[in-house]
Image (cartoon, rainbow, N blue to C red):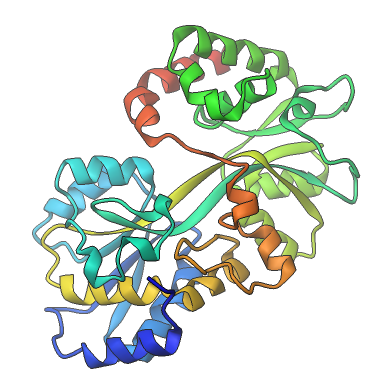
Length: 343
């Protein structure tokens, strides 16, 4: 299917807006994405269609979804979920199965965006970052671990997911084999041994803003960090943070419709509108996330194409977070990581 134009998408939506839901459409964004979701998707959708909609925000978590989906006074319709939440929610019938023919067809999107219960709304990446004003080189993960060659503290998120992958890559595992290695007890031991080597030099961060802050302050020479957060810091705070896309970890954030939503039709119209490449192209400029409709990155200025996680150049050298692996192993690996932290 050829990429739809914004004008054509708007015309189709206006013609199909005859039936309103029982209440306003509620679009639930993830924490720290609410402003971008409002500006890029919700307000333009209201302007184009006249359909009333509002935005709420949530911090994520499958237990929250279970509670919300089963609540008699549930007001959520569309929710942005990560890979784990999407897989679990779909298997537990918390979400509606999508009618792909009503939102442009599967071929309208990159393969990473397509699943039974969700359509990719954006790509967020965890990358190696540094301050180019203070460190002129272009480091790899092996350099991140090499404190003898590049003295200084290192920033990592205080959690197990992501850190085990980066540790193995720094230890010489091919990015494409990371989850195959992690699926073995020997691979997990190898990752923790590599973390042992770096432990005295680690400054732990807890949210995206803190990662950018410790990098800007010089508390760390390099850090793992959210690529969208770095893009926003470079744009709004005039930072000069570098991003290493090679062996970064990317995750698809998807739109899902809660089971039993009285606004299923308008939610479907929203998804059609949100998947318009010209709409998605605005996402990277505002939030640093990349769109997943085919053509969303076409025609972006060079500076925006460089920071979009979903351009072919950036996506092709990244590793997709294996939601299935983490769904099966997060509990035991989190427990081991927390024990490792305290010893």
